[in-house]
Image (cartoon, rainbow, N blue to C red):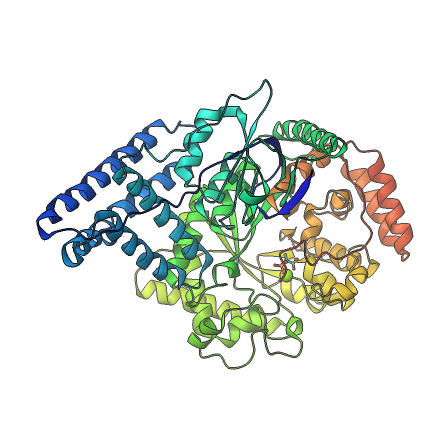
Length: 612
Ligand code: PEP
Ligand code: MG
């Protein structure tokens, strides 16, 4: 009988395979007291087990192929660091001596203590590091038990063409790697009961391109060894023993997706150009430093939008200047001179700081939780201007990173000219502070502004004269032009990116930037919506910034478009005030293209977007 489970889809793609259940990773740990005379022996057992695991990790590191993603070695290094940390390797020895307990018991006491400390940190990334500690300890426990290295075994013989879906409570990244190496192409996907978006195993699955669903808490109860499993990591669905029709439809999807991706990958190294030879820059939107990897994978021309506020959320303490610098520097370095546009903190509305983080700023009511109308409240640049130290700290960190690449500053949600002037004054102050400390930065760093409030789009001359570039935040521009809360599903049907008012503001901004000779990009979701590529191109847009997963599709579309016909489409659309006519014109035009694209009815973008 078929069954369906849900988890968190953390990597892309669909996998079909026979389930192989890995034994629970928690080992039975014997606990007993030892005689004083046996303490040395117990400590020696611990030392020996640690040495064996050290060698095991070294060996694994040596087998990582040079083509493996950089994270792979980083995971192994992290586990090695954890293993060598005195909190893990020295503390259990002390426990053996002071409490006269066996090695395993001492190790698990210390493990629980460390995990308790990690779990109390209000930050998902750090919390998920307790998984790494657990995985390292399990390796040592296995060695103490005289067991083999902690790599799970492969199951029974697979039949011709059959592939495996591993189902486990949790797995260490190193084990995934070892299994991937042994199973090769036979490993189709991974299902874990534990894990989250930022656990290392998840990150590894993503970088290995392994479809994965994590957080599927009942997986080992619902799935039996040998069951046929469809794993849809795009949606987080797991279907156990699907019926023939469903199986066939998934097989077809895998085939189509494979063909599509293979075609698209061929475009990675090519410069994006229209059929009449006009170059277009395709940039990536990222939320966290590690996302820069996806941008590079997709062949992005740079980072068009780094939503820096994601570094500030879900944590009790705000990131220090140094921590921010590291994050920005990591992106700047990895992009190797390609532009990196770092948006200053766009906190507020639905992106809120935790209560303790707000407390640390001395913030009384506000910041989006208690406000009567948060989308119209203290948000983005308004927030930064209200908390100068917060803003200055971030500006110093961005400026310091600017000495390592082509970094630009982007200020969100501008509506008033005085906001630009105040922001500029803060940039100058931050530069002075760095000069005083003799710290390096790019003195000519470009500062640009987001056009996402109609007031800015309607008074552009004042903006273009003060800024070096503009970025159209269409997600918010639509929200504020149409008075539709982008997070409110009750009005989602009114959120229409083709509303003539929106299109006129977008067009006007692109043209004004062009006349003033300053670059304009679109970094809202419209830029990655392939059906709108021609329209935006026709309006004169030459910089599109989007989720990396959309980048090659948009590139493919650009190759089949000419700026002349795109301009005709744009003129036709901008002449009309009738939304139905506008949609028809766009659909008709895209029907000639090879790139599959359809206009969806105006509907809720809120859940699908990283909202602001
Ligand atoms: C936008 O508003 O279009 C934008 C890119 O910013 P965010 O989605 O982060 O608000
Ligand atoms: Mg926005």
